[in-house]
Image 1 (cartoon, rainbow, N blue to C red):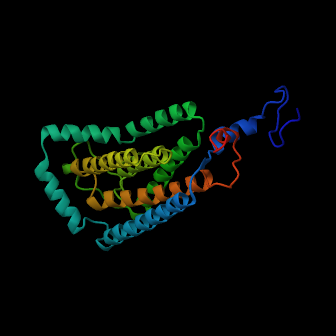
Image 2 (image 1 turned 45 degrees about the vertical axis):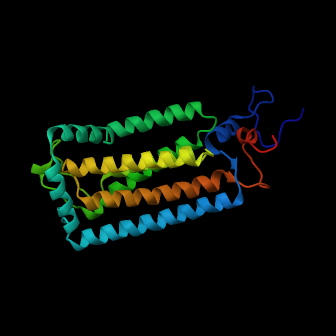
Image 3 (image 1 turned 90 degrees about the vertical axis):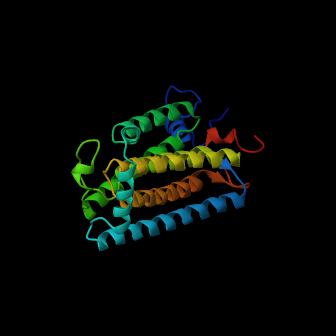
Length: 268
């Protein structure tokens, strides 16, 4: 039988696909069919999220700059309220959350999820997108931190050791938001159960609130830092939805190119 055009068979592999085709079908391409209205809805959602995220971040940044990079009225009000809630048991819970969503715990979780997901899944496109979204969040936050150079709350209010780095935006909150929201989308966008998807995003939302609350409660960030991080995460989530839809979503009549995706195509 003649070799399929474009498979790039390598020496010694017989008629099997070459390394690039294997790599391409596993890591580069994942295709799925959906109705035109559904794909249009995903693009619309992506645009809305990016516009809302950009507007919310711009508003938070403008308020922070207007205050001279100091605390705003809302920041002071939130800090005063959280000080009244402090207790030894609650502090322990918040420290636990800070460790889980911190610079040690969260990267380990992300690494394990990506490696296991990448090896077990037929396609590795989604774990690669998740890793890229997380890396983008880290890079963006570090750039903004150095530009704005906002000071953190007073050291004597910090309950988990002093931190003299810059405050705006919160890297902890941004990392938690990116991981929870992007993972929820990448998982439930392939499911046809709207209730499961709603539950998944509700759980992700609760995680986002807890991550932000822990940083404010422990005295490491202002409220506006957390708001800016959530806004940036919405912007990144919108970009992920647009990219994933462009790369994977096919409507009836469009051609599927990935060999591993063809088995899932209607009529195959």
